[in-house]
Length: 113
Length: 111
Image 1 (cartoon, helix red, strand yellow):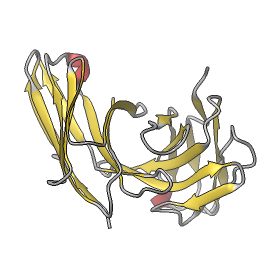
Image 2: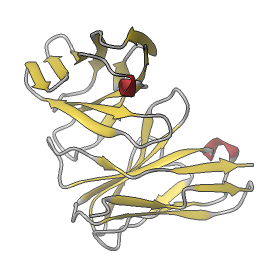
Image 3: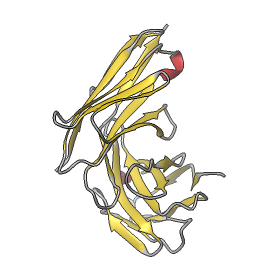
Image 4: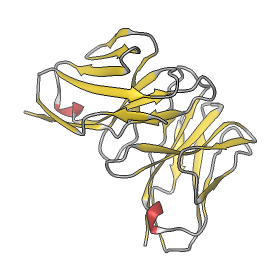
């Protein structure tokens, strides 16, 4: 199993550009999550999904969109990139809620200039 | 709202024992997680507590007191590879399983 994979690893965007961060998991997990991590600020939840076709906002959803058409994939879309979106983005998945641990992908480092 | 507090940085010596504290104020409680994150890498799961008491896993132990809103992670026989950030995360609601993370504690282990 590859676990949770993310692409790209690193990207530079100009202000106003758009991009999609890809996330795929091969563990047949129902729950998937997107976090951003800024230096010294911990992980902030952007969006999450509890199954195909179901998504919900987290703590910091503004400027982002998601979709979940399959169990495996949970892409994060940035429209009109802003410098405030410079961050490291982590995708995670878990089989269900409760005591199930979340497994994290390797992260995407995004720089918006 | 949710509030989770951890010390920003700690230092310790190889072979020693270190305790990393985490206090939380959340609307409801349904479990506390500890994750380890090495610089430039993804967080990895260390431990989970939902009932009061101590959970031990090799060199790592985690303690929870729900009445005090308090947890600690205990690392014994410290090794250089334990230098990392340690994240405390709380699952506050009984519904969907979202976690609220603290800002993390950067632990530096010196020889």
